[in-house]
Amino acid sequence: MAERRVFVLGLDGVPWTLAERFADEGVMPNLGRLLGGGGAAQIDSVYPTVSNVAWSCFQTGKNPGRFDIFGFAEIDRRLQLRLPNGEHLLSETIEQVVSAAGGRVISLGLPSGHPPRAINGLMVGGFLAPSLERTVHPPGRLEELRRLGWQLDVDPVRARTDRDYLQRAAMELLAGRRRTADAMLAEPWDLFLLHVMETDRVNHFLWGQWADGGPAAAFFRDFYRGVDDWLGRLDAALGDDVTLIVLSDHGFCRITAEVQLNRWLRREGCLWTAGPPERMFQAVAPPSRAVSLVPGRVHLLRREAFDVGTLEPDEAAALRDELADKLRRWTDPASGAAVCARLLRREETFAGPYVHHAPDLLIDPADGYDLKAALSDGELFDHSPLEGMHTYRDAMLCIRGRAVTPERRGITDVTRSILDLLGVPAGGDLDSRGVLA
Image (cartoon, rainbow, N blue to C red; front, side, top):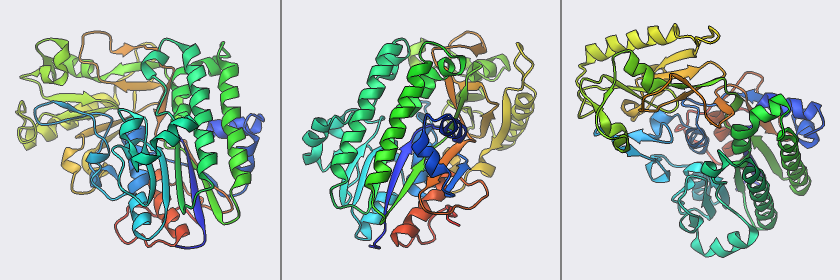
């Protein structure tokens, strides 16, 4: 291995614009100092813009069409739901590449890290794992992680209605991440990957409170002060032989309304359901022609792809054009604002052997319109306890002591640069272009 080491702090869902604002306001002075060092850039996320897909793109350096995960939930040809995990990530990861090159890797908390892969070092899965006990490799490190206070995630169901719990849990988990990192920095390692999910949770549930100056606005800032204090200590603890990378996987904005795409498909005569709600997508019935999954993934019910499918290729192509045209013109009746910013066809968005599993049509929503997929009856424009939503643009990248290319890049492009810094050949198997100038 090269003498240089790399530490990646993954702050889930921290927007570039929020980082800049909090740096200017003195909430995050340590991050501000790093942002001002020249090695920082606003970058793009990936499509679909969800954490498990984005971090899988980072881990592989590839787009989803080359590793076969397109969201938190997928449907098979019988319309049964599948929750993909690391077993469904059909690609080698950066942890494995560096391990094979003789490097030692510590990887903590990445969403597709469950079940953990056998690497040279330590691998712990993230918030999608069923339990900490089942997501640690080697398993002999489990008790140490418990002692240090490492936890997988806050309880997102409880957090929807109990903001006091969310605040306590977010700070507790952040403290556990910090203790774990401090303890493991003393070990030998070449690549250290540490994912923080609490930033995303706080943004989802408290973004509106912060924006409006509500009761939790002070906590929102204090939480980010805590993140920044930890970042400052990391910056000081990591030697000159370490490149520190601070990275987020997507941006964030305030929710105006949750938009129920399956209800819209029902209104447009494309979706029917039959049977009890607990059947979920298996309740989709003939003569349905399309169904949507979060976030904004529209699958056409093609004859060759789904048991209930009836569409021939020419019919599917015509329906996709029809839906895309209607979605471009769809507006919020309360404001007249457009709901959809971009309509993306799968063949122009993805590449690789698994493109046929991708959604036929992918919607990049306008800021504020959070795309959901309820199959129940109800309003098209809905609301829930969530206050913030993901955005494709406005992710963040900061590389200490390095210059990054000035044009906007994506999270996938960071992978090649990490391998370059470590002196590990990337080969030709990456979509990544790299971000170092």
